[in-house]
Amino acid sequence: MIAAYVGAEPVTVAAVDELAAAMRDGPFAARLPHPSSAEGRNLRRWLVQVLTATAVAEQEARRRGLPPAGTAAPPTLGRALRLGGVAAAVAAARPDVYAAVTEGVTVGEDAIRDYWERNRDRHPEPLDRSRAAVAAVLGQAARDRHFGRWLDERCAALVRLMPGFEHPGDPAQPDYAHHH
Image (cartoon, rainbow, N blue to C red):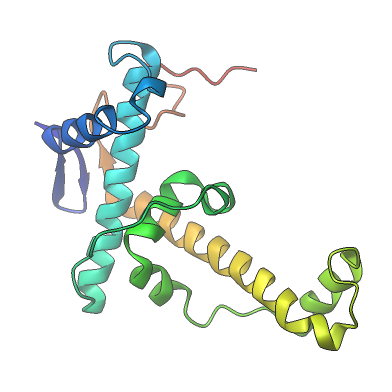
């Protein structure tokens, strides 16, 4: 049974079930929703998002001739909040793809100066002494934005979700719960 396609490659329901089982056997199992609840079904939908986005990165790695992925460390909370959970998981799983996709992303001098002027409480030193730190912060943010946009665009172009595995935020799916 197929949960999604990434290009011509299937993401199987078995792969989704395997990832769900690993999470239910992990240290945060008690925090997970019951599988038969709406939240539990949406968790499965999120896992499909992770698996399809990871498959997009794997396809990109093969296209670029990068080696197979090694064991990935989980993303930090800060990285997950900055980049988004799915994109952060993909960047952690394939840091080489992240690096390749974001190679050449830079921040201009005007942006560095503007940030320094607006954040003197964080950078009280003169700009010439703060430039490297400010450039590092802004550069990471720019690379994260670029990678997130790239991943969104590639997923939109390549991923086809099967019924029952729609995005959790899709208002057409029956467990949609984002209400104002």
